Image (cartoon, rainbow, N blue to C red; front, top):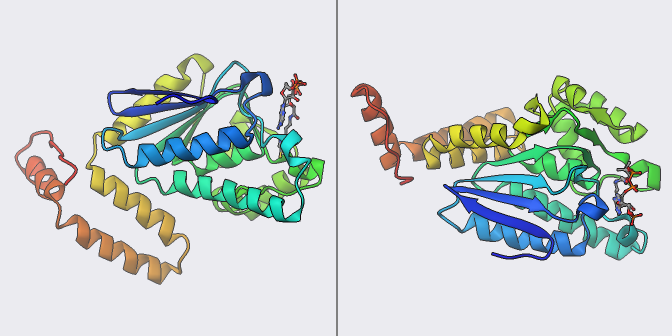
Length: 260
Ligand code: COA
């Protein structure tokens, strides 16, 4: 696949998606948003891809936010449409059915932080900076940030970031649970790959259904979430992978999962 604003590579079951607008710190303009949607839809239906690594091209940024030039021209209706489009992309990534690991260096601001939060896991390099600076330009986070940030780090920390607009360091992001780990920049992609491969070694349907249980469960009461969990647990018990996984354990050998 070739794109104007993304770099795409596929190797050994991993899709590497890189947002490529380094001269604008990978700001999310219309072209990037359209291509990201096309790209993630293609990944979703591509059985050869078992995990995704999302990164930003260039030395300085994962993504420095939505494109402020384009934002400045929005009216009420177009503003709502732009927000809905960003939310749909984030939902697509979150509900892809396969793990998406964000490998974050440099700035992850506004829509960049929101894009990272839609990913399954986040690996940050030591130079990463996270923030929701929208209030500084008269708007609020619009790609799901007001919802995902508070779910990830709690209401108090989320409100501090959203209301002050001030960025936080990678270490602080780790401390509050916004990222899963912080590593030296040279190890960023290797760490993301190692995480992806650990997940890929597990039963694909169990991974997919775990994602579903956690994401949908969070929208429900605990009792409803547990009901969903029991249904999905039952579904796992019908899979070949469950038979293989349990048999392999009992036979003291590694499992060979078929994703069925
Ligand atoms: N939208 C559009 N362009 C952006 C951008 C954004 N969100 N973020 C950076 N850019 C562009 C700059 O306009 C500049 O383009 P130019 O060289 O054509 O003037 C280029 O990227 C480099 O950015 P610059 O501001 O010169 O780098 P810096 O090192 O001085 O500052 C930041 C880096 C990230 C602190 C600063 O670019 C910034 O604050 N960006 C906006 C962050 C933001 O508010 N994001 C949320 C938007 S809702």
